Amino acid sequence: MAAETCDNCSLTYFYNQASHPLETSSLLLLILLGKTLLSLFVLRIKRQDARESFMEHFCISLALLDFILLVTLSFIFYFEDFALWGVRFTKYHICLVAQIMSLTYGILHCPVYLVAGLDHYLMVTQTSKVPNICQRLFYIFAVVLIWVSVTIYVLRVPGIYAGLETQSNFFAYQCPLYISIQSYWLSVAMLLVICIVLVVCWSEVIDMVRSVRLISYTSETVLFFPYTSDCNYSGWKKQLLTRLLICFLGTWAPFVLLQMIILLLGAQIPTYMEMNVPWLYFMN
Image (cartoon, rainbow, N blue to C red; front, side):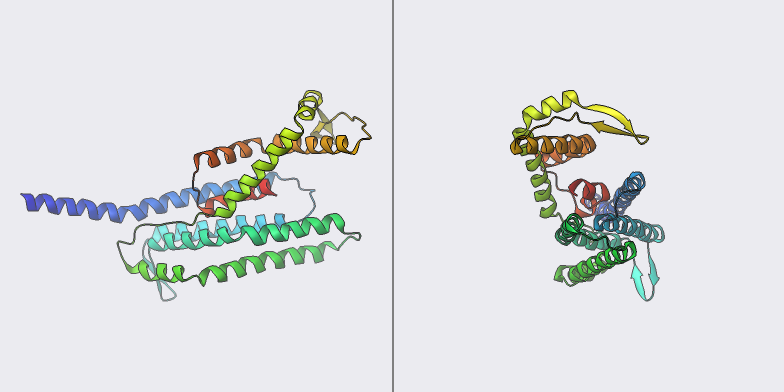
Protein backbone atom coordinates (compact mmCIF):
# COMPACT_ATOMS: atom_id res chain seq x y z
CA MET A 1 0.00 0.00 0.00
CA ALA A 2 2.85 2.32 0.87
CA ALA A 3 4.64 1.40 -2.34
CA GLU A 4 1.48 2.12 -4.37
CA THR A 5 1.12 5.50 -2.67
CA CYS A 6 4.74 6.29 -3.39
CA ASP A 7 4.27 5.38 -7.06
CA ASN A 8 1.28 7.71 -7.26
CA CYS A 9 3.36 10.49 -5.72
CA SER A 10 6.09 9.88 -8.29
CA LEU A 11 3.59 10.05 -11.11
CA THR A 12 2.16 13.30 -9.78
CA TYR A 13 5.64 14.78 -9.45
CA PHE A 14 6.47 13.64 -12.98
CA TYR A 15 3.30 15.25 -14.36
CA ASN A 16 3.94 18.55 -12.61
CA GLN A 17 7.48 18.64 -13.89
CA ALA A 18 6.35 17.84 -17.41
CA SER A 19 3.37 20.19 -17.50
CA HIS A 20 5.29 23.17 -16.18
CA PRO A 21 7.01 23.98 -19.51
CA LEU A 22 3.69 23.77 -21.32
CA GLU A 23 2.08 26.25 -18.93
CA THR A 24 5.09 28.53 -19.25
CA SER A 25 4.91 28.31 -23.03
CA SER A 26 1.22 29.24 -23.07
CA LEU A 27 1.81 32.21 -20.79
CA LEU A 28 4.79 33.33 -22.86
CA LEU A 29 2.74 33.24 -26.06
CA LEU A 30 -0.09 35.23 -24.48
CA ILE A 31 2.34 37.87 -23.18
CA LEU A 32 4.09 38.09 -26.54
CA LEU A 33 0.72 38.40 -28.31
CA GLY A 34 -0.35 41.29 -26.07
CA LYS A 35 3.04 42.96 -26.43
CA THR A 36 2.91 42.71 -30.23
CA LEU A 37 -0.64 44.07 -30.44
CA LEU A 38 0.23 46.96 -28.12
CA SER A 39 3.32 47.85 -30.15
CA LEU A 40 1.38 47.78 -33.43
CA PHE A 41 -1.37 49.92 -31.88
CA VAL A 42 1.11 52.57 -30.71
CA LEU A 43 2.80 52.64 -34.11
CA ARG A 44 -0.58 53.00 -35.78
CA ILE A 45 -1.79 55.98 -33.72
CA LYS A 46 1.46 57.96 -33.85
CA ARG A 47 1.57 61.19 -35.80
CA GLN A 48 2.03 60.42 -39.48
CA ASP A 49 3.61 63.81 -40.24
CA ALA A 50 6.35 63.41 -37.61
CA ARG A 51 9.94 63.62 -38.76
CA GLU A 52 11.63 60.29 -39.44
CA SER A 53 14.13 59.27 -36.81
CA PHE A 54 16.28 56.33 -35.82
CA MET A 55 14.03 55.54 -32.87
CA GLU A 56 11.01 55.27 -35.15
CA HIS A 57 12.77 52.78 -37.44
CA PHE A 58 14.02 50.76 -34.49
CA CYS A 59 10.52 50.57 -32.98
CA ILE A 60 9.17 49.30 -36.29
CA SER A 61 11.88 46.62 -36.39
CA LEU A 62 11.10 45.66 -32.78
CA ALA A 63 7.39 45.24 -33.50
CA LEU A 64 8.21 43.23 -36.64
CA LEU A 65 10.63 40.96 -34.77
CA ASP A 66 8.11 40.40 -31.97
CA PHE A 67 5.54 39.37 -34.57
CA ILE A 68 8.00 36.94 -36.21
CA LEU A 69 8.87 35.46 -32.82
CA LEU A 70 5.19 35.10 -31.98
CA VAL A 71 4.52 33.21 -35.22
CA THR A 72 7.62 31.01 -34.76
CA LEU A 73 6.88 30.11 -31.14
CA SER A 74 3.22 29.47 -31.96
CA PHE A 75 4.32 27.09 -34.72
CA ILE A 76 6.56 25.19 -32.29
CA PHE A 77 3.84 25.17 -29.62
CA TYR A 78 1.22 23.82 -32.04
CA PHE A 79 3.28 21.01 -33.58
CA GLU A 80 5.01 20.20 -30.24
CA ASP A 81 7.68 17.87 -31.62
CA PHE A 82 9.01 18.03 -35.19
CA ALA A 83 12.22 18.10 -37.19
CA LEU A 84 13.21 20.87 -39.56
CA TRP A 85 16.44 20.95 -41.58
CA GLY A 86 17.82 18.13 -39.50
CA VAL A 87 17.10 19.87 -36.17
CA ARG A 88 14.52 18.49 -33.75
CA PHE A 89 12.29 21.13 -32.16
CA THR A 90 10.23 20.60 -29.01
CA LYS A 91 8.35 22.89 -26.64
CA TYR A 92 11.49 23.26 -24.58
CA HIS A 93 12.94 25.29 -27.46
CA ILE A 94 10.30 27.94 -26.70
CA CYS A 95 12.08 28.57 -23.41
CA LEU A 96 15.45 28.63 -25.15
CA VAL A 97 14.25 31.20 -27.69
CA ALA A 98 12.79 33.27 -24.85
CA GLN A 99 16.14 33.21 -23.04
CA ILE A 100 18.01 34.33 -26.16
CA MET A 101 15.38 37.00 -26.77
CA SER A 102 15.66 38.28 -23.19
CA LEU A 103 19.45 38.46 -23.33
CA THR A 104 19.34 40.26 -26.68
CA TYR A 105 16.74 42.81 -25.55
CA GLY A 106 18.65 43.39 -22.32
CA ILE A 107 21.80 44.48 -24.15
CA LEU A 108 20.01 46.69 -26.68
CA HIS A 109 19.42 49.61 -24.31
CA CYS A 110 22.90 51.13 -24.50
CA PRO A 111 23.48 51.05 -28.30
CA VAL A 112 19.90 52.09 -29.09
CA TYR A 113 19.91 55.15 -26.83
CA LEU A 114 23.44 56.09 -27.87
CA VAL A 115 22.49 56.14 -31.56
CA ALA A 116 19.12 57.79 -30.81
CA GLY A 117 20.84 60.54 -28.82
CA LEU A 118 23.34 61.11 -31.62
CA ASP A 119 20.48 61.24 -34.12
CA HIS A 120 18.62 63.86 -32.05
CA TYR A 121 21.80 65.92 -31.72
CA LEU A 122 22.43 65.87 -35.47
CA MET A 123 18.78 66.73 -36.13
CA VAL A 124 19.02 69.84 -33.95
CA THR A 125 22.43 71.02 -35.17
CA GLN A 126 22.24 70.20 -38.87
CA THR A 127 22.21 73.24 -41.16
CA SER A 128 21.40 71.49 -44.43
CA LYS A 129 18.56 69.11 -45.08
CA VAL A 130 19.72 65.57 -45.85
CA PRO A 131 17.81 63.79 -48.64
CA ASN A 132 15.11 61.55 -47.18
CA ILE A 133 16.25 58.48 -49.11
CA CYS A 134 19.82 58.74 -47.78
CA GLN A 135 18.58 59.33 -44.26
CA ARG A 136 16.18 56.39 -44.44
CA LEU A 137 18.89 54.06 -45.76
CA PHE A 138 21.21 55.14 -42.94
CA TYR A 139 18.54 54.41 -40.33
CA ILE A 140 17.82 50.98 -41.82
CA PHE A 141 21.54 50.17 -41.92
CA ALA A 142 22.00 51.27 -38.29
CA VAL A 143 19.01 49.21 -37.12
CA VAL A 144 20.16 46.06 -38.94
CA LEU A 145 23.74 46.52 -37.70
CA ILE A 146 22.62 46.83 -34.07
CA TRP A 147 20.34 43.79 -34.21
CA VAL A 148 22.95 41.60 -35.92
CA SER A 149 25.82 42.72 -33.66
CA VAL A 150 23.89 42.23 -30.42
CA THR A 151 22.52 38.85 -31.52
CA ILE A 152 25.98 37.58 -32.47
CA TYR A 153 27.33 38.80 -29.14
CA VAL A 154 24.57 37.02 -27.21
CA LEU A 155 25.04 33.74 -29.08
CA ARG A 156 28.71 33.81 -28.12
CA VAL A 157 27.82 33.85 -24.40
CA PRO A 158 28.83 30.47 -22.90
CA GLY A 159 25.53 30.13 -21.01
CA ILE A 160 23.63 29.88 -24.29
CA TYR A 161 25.58 26.81 -25.32
CA ALA A 162 24.93 25.25 -21.93
CA GLY A 163 21.22 25.88 -22.49
CA LEU A 164 21.39 24.19 -25.88
CA GLU A 165 22.92 21.08 -24.35
CA THR A 166 20.24 20.79 -21.66
CA GLN A 167 17.33 20.87 -24.09
CA SER A 168 17.58 17.11 -24.55
CA ASN A 169 17.00 16.62 -20.82
CA PHE A 170 13.29 16.11 -20.22
CA PHE A 171 13.44 17.53 -16.70
CA ALA A 172 14.98 20.83 -17.78
CA TYR A 173 11.66 22.53 -17.11
CA GLN A 174 12.77 25.72 -15.42
CA CYS A 175 12.99 28.76 -17.64
CA PRO A 176 14.99 31.55 -15.97
CA LEU A 177 14.77 34.78 -17.95
CA TYR A 178 17.19 37.70 -17.97
CA ILE A 179 16.27 40.79 -15.92
CA SER A 180 17.92 43.95 -17.21
CA ILE A 181 19.41 46.32 -14.63
CA GLN A 182 19.75 48.96 -17.37
CA SER A 183 16.01 49.29 -17.70
CA TYR A 184 15.69 49.72 -13.93
CA TRP A 185 18.19 52.58 -13.78
CA LEU A 186 16.70 54.24 -16.86
CA SER A 187 13.31 54.30 -15.15
CA VAL A 188 14.88 55.61 -11.94
CA ALA A 189 16.67 58.38 -13.86
CA MET A 190 13.50 59.35 -15.72
CA LEU A 191 11.40 59.58 -12.54
CA LEU A 192 14.19 61.43 -10.73
CA VAL A 193 14.35 64.08 -13.47
CA ILE A 194 10.56 64.49 -13.39
CA CYS A 195 10.58 64.90 -9.60
CA ILE A 196 13.42 67.45 -9.69
CA VAL A 197 11.71 69.56 -12.34
CA LEU A 198 8.42 69.29 -10.47
CA VAL A 199 10.03 70.51 -7.22
CA VAL A 200 11.99 73.34 -8.86
CA CYS A 201 9.03 74.59 -10.92
CA TRP A 202 6.21 73.79 -8.48
CA SER A 203 4.72 77.29 -8.33
CA GLU A 204 4.94 77.70 -12.12
CA VAL A 205 3.29 74.30 -12.58
CA ILE A 206 0.33 75.29 -10.39
CA ASP A 207 -0.14 78.63 -12.16
CA MET A 208 0.18 77.14 -15.63
CA VAL A 209 -2.17 74.22 -14.94
CA ARG A 210 -4.81 76.72 -13.83
CA SER A 211 -4.39 78.83 -16.97
CA VAL A 212 -3.89 76.12 -19.61
CA ARG A 213 -6.66 75.75 -22.19
CA LEU A 214 -7.66 73.09 -24.70
CA ILE A 215 -8.13 74.57 -28.16
CA SER A 216 -8.56 73.29 -31.69
CA TYR A 217 -5.66 73.98 -34.06
CA THR A 218 -5.60 72.69 -37.66
CA SER A 219 -8.33 70.17 -36.82
CA GLU A 220 -6.41 68.86 -33.80
CA THR A 221 -6.88 69.35 -30.08
CA VAL A 222 -3.84 71.00 -28.51
CA LEU A 223 -2.83 72.55 -25.20
CA PHE A 224 -2.63 76.33 -25.25
CA PHE A 225 -0.29 77.99 -22.75
CA PRO A 226 -1.00 81.70 -22.27
CA TYR A 227 2.06 83.73 -23.17
CA THR A 228 3.77 85.54 -20.32
CA SER A 229 6.70 87.77 -21.15
CA ASP A 230 9.64 87.61 -18.78
CA CYS A 231 13.00 89.10 -19.64
CA ASN A 232 14.68 87.18 -16.85
CA TYR A 233 16.55 84.17 -18.23
CA SER A 234 15.86 82.10 -15.11
CA GLY A 235 12.12 82.82 -15.30
CA TRP A 236 12.00 81.96 -19.00
CA LYS A 237 13.84 78.71 -18.36
CA LYS A 238 11.39 77.71 -15.64
CA GLN A 239 8.46 78.46 -17.94
CA LEU A 240 9.94 76.26 -20.65
CA LEU A 241 10.62 73.40 -18.22
CA THR A 242 7.11 73.74 -16.81
CA ARG A 243 5.49 73.53 -20.23
CA LEU A 244 7.61 70.54 -21.18
CA LEU A 245 6.70 68.81 -17.93
CA ILE A 246 2.97 69.43 -18.34
CA CYS A 247 3.00 68.21 -21.94
CA PHE A 248 5.03 65.14 -21.00
CA LEU A 249 2.84 64.18 -18.05
CA GLY A 250 -0.29 64.90 -20.06
CA THR A 251 0.87 62.29 -22.57
CA TRP A 252 2.59 59.72 -20.37
CA ALA A 253 0.93 60.04 -16.93
CA PRO A 254 -0.31 56.38 -16.89
CA PHE A 255 3.14 55.14 -17.89
CA VAL A 256 4.84 57.30 -15.24
CA LEU A 257 2.47 55.86 -12.63
CA LEU A 258 3.20 52.34 -13.88
CA GLN A 259 6.96 52.90 -13.59
CA MET A 260 6.51 54.19 -10.04
CA ILE A 261 4.48 51.13 -9.04
CA ILE A 262 7.02 48.76 -10.59
CA LEU A 263 9.93 50.42 -8.80
CA LEU A 264 8.12 50.60 -5.45
CA LEU A 265 7.13 46.93 -5.60
CA GLY A 266 10.58 45.91 -6.82
CA ALA A 267 8.99 43.80 -9.53
CA GLN A 268 11.44 41.95 -11.74
CA ILE A 269 10.20 42.04 -15.32
CA PRO A 270 11.96 40.01 -18.05
CA THR A 271 13.57 42.16 -20.70
CA TYR A 272 11.48 40.68 -23.50
CA MET A 273 8.51 42.37 -21.79
CA GLU A 274 10.30 45.61 -20.89
CA MET A 275 11.65 46.25 -24.37
CA ASN A 276 8.48 47.35 -26.16
CA VAL A 277 7.46 50.26 -28.37
CA PRO A 278 5.50 52.25 -25.73
CA TRP A 279 8.41 51.99 -23.26
CA LEU A 280 10.90 53.13 -25.91
CA TYR A 281 8.70 56.11 -26.85
CA PHE A 282 8.35 56.95 -23.15
CA MET A 283 12.11 56.94 -22.57
CA ASN A 284 12.71 58.76 -25.83
